[in-house]
Every structure is written in structure tokens, then in C-alpha cells.
Amino acid sequence: MPRNGRNPRTTRCAGPAGARRREDQAFLTGILTSAEDFERARAWTLTDAADYDSYLLDTAVLLAEAERTFGVVQARMFHPQDFAEFCLLHGLDPAEPAARDRYLVNPALQTQLLPYQGEELAGDFVPRLVRARENGLTLLHADLLLEGGLLGGAQERQPQDVRQAYQQGAEIFRRMLVGAGYGAFTFRCVVEAPGGRLEAQARVLHWEDGVVRLNDEDLDLVCAVLCAGLARELPGLAVLTGTQGGGSSCGEYRQVAWAWQSGGYDYTPAVTELAAPGFPLGTVC
Image 1 (cartoon, rainbow, N blue to C red):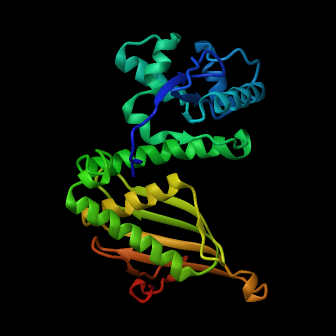
Image 2 (cartoon, helix red, strand yellow; image 1 turned 135 degrees about the vertical axis):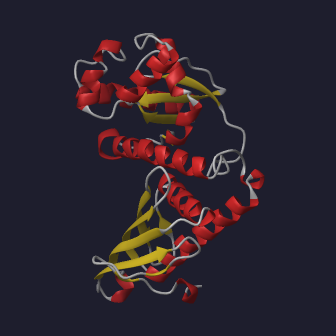
């Protein structure tokens, strides 16, 4: 869901150079996420780096400096095909910095933004940027199904049916995680929707002290997909797999796989080839 509060003003940068620096602004940049994308973007002179490894080093330096200067740093995947199509649609020259600025602040891409907080680029942040693009496209699809009710504003301004479905979806997800107990899990859900499937996935760590850890953007997507299915009464399937157990269980761990299905109203235990029927969610507090 969109975060409440006034958004900071942003400085845009499509590569590791050329950003304006002002203390009252956030820093926004686009990052190439593969060597193939780097080669494709060479003609647009996004960077002076000789190769992709050098580009990542330069970008890491840029982001570290931006953190010190601005405090708030945001990034999204710079997708060459998306950028080329955006420029063609709007009659822009992709080699011009102004075209990159317009691409980065395109409202349709706001769902792809991630906060940067010092993560290692290649091992952590870049893969999250790739997933954020995919997640953002799914969020836009879900929002379209809900006629703008998902991303159109603060939660209190959402249509009542969308708000209720979102709360129901979040509660369903919470009960699945609580019922699973401690461990490391992967959650996947699919909703059969007009225009194509809505899919979401989240890696979840459930510690013995009750703390549940997962990426914010993954939680947002899971709740949005469940919400769209419930609000529009679409069939869906949810599967939770992983390793159950913790230190208090004397080192005993077991592999688990549970499934639930929905006819559009709720999620109930389902029989699948790869997972056992999930526990009844109504028995979980």
C-alpha cells in the first residue's frame, strides 16, 4: 500500500553521475541490473564505466555519497526496453538526460521504487530491484482490476469494499504465518484474473520471539494480490513451503508444504500434488 505522509522532493539520476545535491531533496536513481542491459544502454551514454563491474562500483560510490548528502535515497531498475518504449511513446531522444529524468519520475513506475539503505548491490539490492519491477507491474494490474482503489490514495480514501478486502487478505496471510509456527518459509499466491494471472511471492523468517521478517515490498504485493482476488471474487491458490522448527525444538526441523484455495470469498485447505491441505485458518488466533 502507498506509504502515508508527504513525499520528499527528489533529485533524479539515471547513472553514477550528474545528480543535483540539495539538502531538502531525496535522491532518485535508476540502476542497470545486468551486463546485458549495460551493453544495450551504452549508446545512451548513461555512464563512463568501461564494463558492468566497474559500473556497479561507481554506482555504489554514488549511492553512498547520496546517503550522506540527502539521507533519503530511492532507486528503481533502469530497464532498457521499458525506457526505449517510453521514449518512443513520448517522442523523446533516449540520449538526452531530460528523457531519463522523465522516465524515472513517470508516475506509472512509482510502484517500482525501493529505498536504498546501504545494501550490497550485486548480492542483495540489484536482485530486489528486478523483483520490484515485476512486483510493480503486478500492483498496477491489481489496481486496474480495482478501478484505481488500491493505489489511488491514502487508505482512508479507499472504497470500502477494497479496504475491507485488503484487511481480510492481510489477516489471512497473518493467520497462515502464525499457524505455520517458527521457521523459514516461502509463500506464493496466484489469483486467476482478467488480463492474466496475479502472482506474488515472499520469503519469510518467523523467529521464536514472534518477530516475522520479510521485505516490505513483498508484503505489499502479497496483500494486494489477495485483496484483488477477494474484492473481485476471483479464484486463487496460496502455498506455504519451507522448514519448520527452531532452537527451542531441540534442533528438530521438518519440511512442510501447505496449500489453501479460494473461490473468491475466503481461503480454505486445498489438495494439490505438491502440498498437503493447509490447516483451517479459523482455528488460528
